[in-house]
Amino acid sequence: GQQVMQIPQYQHVQEGEDFTTYCNSSTTLSNIQWYKQRPGGHPVFLIQLVKSGEVKKQKRLTFQFGEAKKNSSLHITATQTTDVGTYFCAGRGSGGGADGLTFGKGTHLIIQP
Amino acid sequence: GAVVSQHPSWVICKSGTSVKIECRSLDFQATTMFWYRQFPKQSLMLMATSNEGSKATYEQGVEKDKFLINHASLTLSTLTVTSAHPEDSSFYICSARAGTWVNVLTFGAGSRLTVL
Image 1 (cartoon, rainbow over the protein chains, first blue to last red):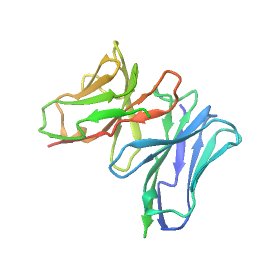
Image 2 (cartoon, each protein chain N blue to C red):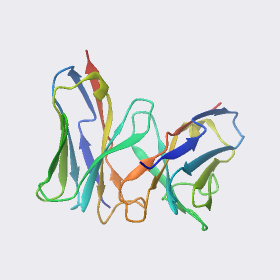
Image 3 (cartoon, rainbow over the protein chains, first blue to last red):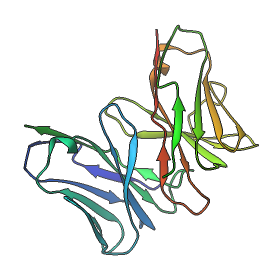
Image 4 (cartoon, rainbow over the protein chains, first blue to last red):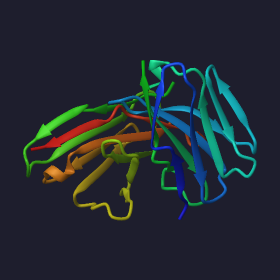
């Protein structure tokens, strides 16, 4: 079945440093979504990428979808303490769950002031 | 935007008792809702799909007699953990799509269950 691998599992950064998390799918995706879950909270939708090679920005966050639509990345520039949380990618393809998505395991971002 | 309300946010119960968790779509109708389980520092595990007016569809390995799902209306789905045991302690989250053609999931706030 479809698998979505996400790395790294944990990332410690100093406040102000950049952060990147990567997702790789075993199959071609129709789209990929990113969610953020704050500690103790629930996942909140950030963005959806649909087109091959697509790049979208939200302030300090940059999202990319690979040309082959099998990988994606989220890059945060100059991290702030408010960026703390777990970032999940979720791919939509032919092998997704009943919710249509296959979630990555998430990357836990820990920021040291 | 779409809002999904989940209640209770946390519950503590004794082993052997049953616990009901509610998931409501506040400003939209959801013919389908999804229930997940999340262990600490882990990803979301889809447990089942709740279908309004019909039986839920369970993922492989999820006991349907253990986790009873009822979707009696277009805005309410319930998950009942029956005869709960300590290993059922977890974070349970529901989600829904705010429309048939909407890809994005809106999640409830989650319910943290602790079974003593």
